[in-house]
Figure 1 (tube, rainbow, N blue to C red):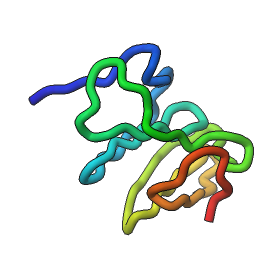
Figure 2 (figure 1 turned 30 degrees about the vertical axis):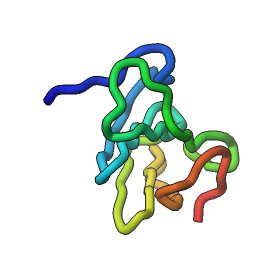
Figure 3 (figure 1 turned 45 degrees about the vertical axis):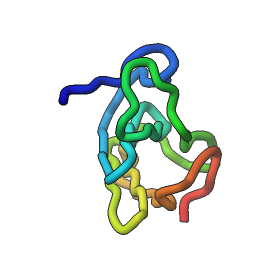
Figure 4 (figure 1 turned 90 degrees about the horizontal axis):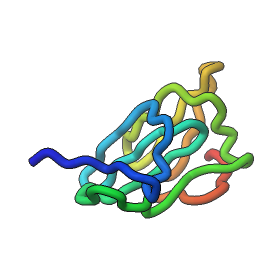
Length: 93
């Protein structure tokens, strides 16, 4: 089944990379990570967002999810790691 998440409520404006886990979709978009339920469709809002100055996410290039850790790589190749359930303006591990 083909699905799409799109629209103003998604807050997706410039998707850079995506990771899909068992139950969630992680979208790296500008300087934030938007997290959706895997079954979300259409104009669904994210269930949580990792964003803000404390995250240190800047000009991100890649996102990886392994062993319940989200790792974002910035354009300067600095890797930032967060718990899989992180939300808000959280500091990296």
